[in-house]
Image (cartoon, rainbow, N blue to C red; front, side, top):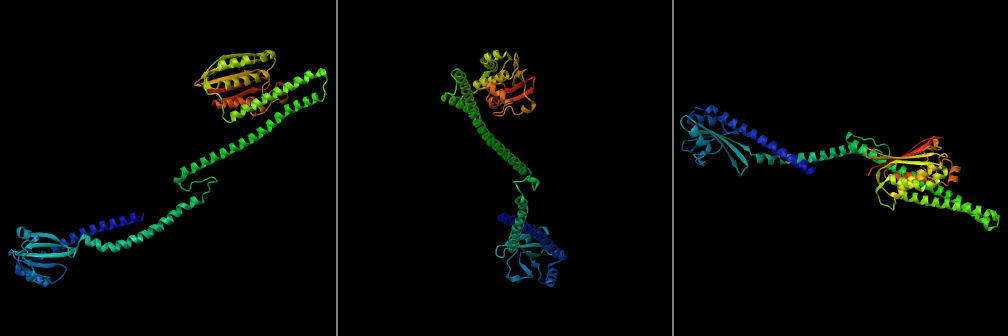
Length: 434
């Protein structure tokens, strides 16, 4: 910055010197013409007398004969001067009546302007004036330029420091941990970026806190859910080992142990599945799959249970998505299984698969007992049961709908619930068509 200021000031000084020099040159020419104006039409004798009367001043007067001999010079002895017949201004005056020229002195670094007129008897009267050249003017201005540059540099640094401090102060005082207000209009994009980043960080922290809380809650629920069947199995085993069960009742005890073990196995399998989904792991790659065929397989797998409860299942429509077949099968299986469990005797389950505008919609609706309004927002939570006593009887783990939601999310889909207590429930799944 300092170098730029110095160069700028130097160039400015040079430009001013050039302008001043041009003005001085024009003024010098005008002065010479004005000085010789009274001599126009005079002869050599009259001109010499007038020139002697003028005496020495800033303008040098010389009288030159037609052959170039200097007859008179106001500054030096005419005897010491060389013949001037070859001088440019003299030649022009002899030919045209008037002539002018300028010559530069390498010795004194000055320029002399000459103006000559032809007198009535043919002699030449010449006036001369010496001025500093542009280089001389610039050289003489160097000390001033250096002084000005030095002052400007000091002032520039002082002003820049003060201005910078004035600009920086509002920024230093801004609290980016609070709501960051832009101190200047130019900082508004920066303020918006800070706000967006802070919001993103706060969201991530909130999600992280929520995730930690969910894991803590999940661990506590897992411990509780595992403890219940294990306690039952341990109690029955203790009764058997202590011969506390009659021979005729042992079959019933064995059946209870088997049921609790099956419930424990199902719970562990569901815990493993949801843990894998949490970690984003999947053993099966995505491929085009036909939803109608997978839904049919799930219906067939639950045919005996449906038959026992007298629940009729219908299926219509179809569509292809990119997904993992085993996951989608489990989704259909869990939703149809729930629809059977919580249906009324001789109830109905309707499965419809439709396609519209690049989306595939799967609706699994039943006319069963429905879900209370206050419970509908929580049915996808882990281990949440609307009716704990009924869930225990039907063997539910409380993880089925949580697994379904995770699977749908893994497939970039959505799941919604519509239900009215006593009239049934509908689960609507949305996928991207393959």
